[in-house]
Length: 144
Length: 118
Image 1 (cartoon, one colour):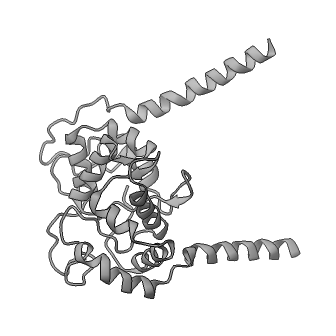
Image 2 (tube, rainbow over the protein chains, first blue to last red):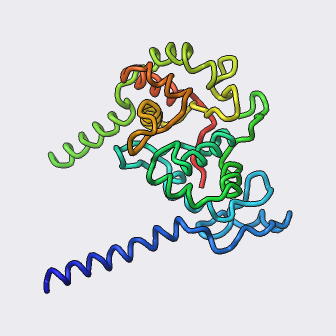
């Protein structure tokens, strides 16, 4: 009996833990609406809402919320398979970010965490995130 | 008092460990990087500008991430964690563990445009 209780408690814990992950992985309910050109910029970047794109065109549709839990925290470290800093992705080449996410999705890059996150992203999501974090391909010479 | 002191010592030791990560030698790393990495990850010696847009910038990236990534390229996609990339597999395969640490030290100390953004 005691054992049964413990097992069901464990089950409940798991059940409680899983949805929060699934929530992360599931596409956001609100499809990224065609952003009106002038309406978005005033909105502050927030966890739940839309994150204004640097380029001022479109937005990440809130998908960046999946990234900032790790990539938005200075000094954040991954603990599997060993402890190391997650890469800084802001300012990285846009095309590289896009390819990396697609490779995580396809399994060319094998990484359980990134695979599950990338698998929930459409090609359009990936392009938007790459644009949000990435630097333009042709940065002006000498520009910081 | 002693306790506070030893705590301080522990914190100081920790700080030292993180800054001198894995003991890579940035000077040796620079030599190696100029031989094998610069052709793609820089343009005319400028590490902020990889040759092609699909190649990542390495300048200023975390040293331990660079070490992790190079080892993932070495492993390929045969294990639970790894990367399949024909170009980088060949490059990483030729590097020793020490060379990888040296490269990581060099790249992480370079000034770059990578940063954390929410």
